[in-house]
Image (cartoon, rainbow, N blue to C red; front, side):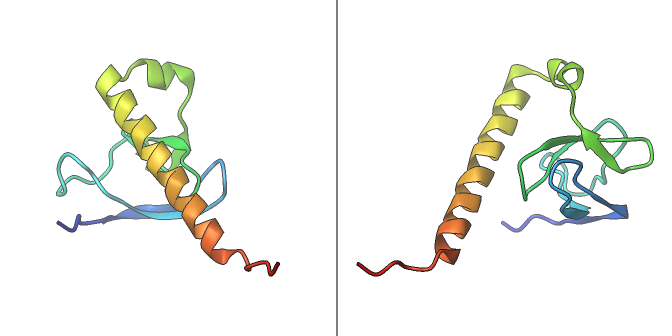
Length: 100
């Protein structure tokens, strides 16, 4: 099943890696656009982000994460692990083969 992305009204940059963020996917309801206080994750570096009232992102602080349920935190950790695995595979594919 393909998820529908919602274009962000203001593309912004990840505060950790600087990647351009211009779309979002709501995993609970594909029709919903992000709102202030919603959580996100950069697919380039795995940084957990929070939408501000201007719908740009900031890094999630410990106080933000403390508000989340254990289930949601576990989901974020699994998403980060998956993102890191994919980035590792992409990096391995870009490495030139060494001859022995």
